[in-house]
Image 1 (tube, rainbow, N blue to C red):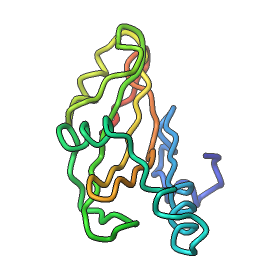
Image 2: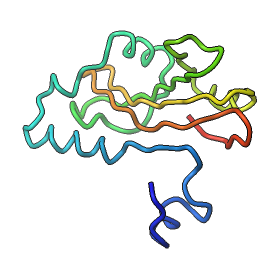
Image 3: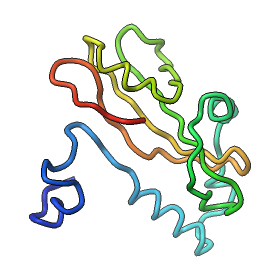
Image 4: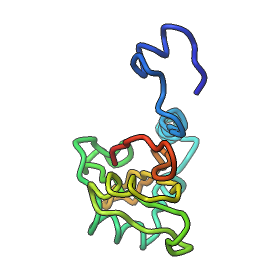
Length: 140
């Protein structure tokens, strides 16, 4: 995200966006808009893999956000970390576990995915790095 004067300061705060953080909310809103206009079908957007649904049920952090597709269930946030000394498929993280990764000497890539375990909607919300030199504190 680029800095656009005082508008970005109002959005991100005085310090600007956190370093190494990428938000995917605009893409999410575009997909939801296309679904609601009938350009995408439910099977196109509700395609969570069984493993993602399992992790969401067991390690997900409940939110107060209603699913934009089925509009019945609350979404769950699932966090994953990828990096050195982690399995090649990454590691699912329990709520609050991201803060512990800051002590890691190696930089890790973390992803937060929102999931509806009822209709199988899923979307990548954000990506950021933790650990390594000069890491900043992020919440999962």
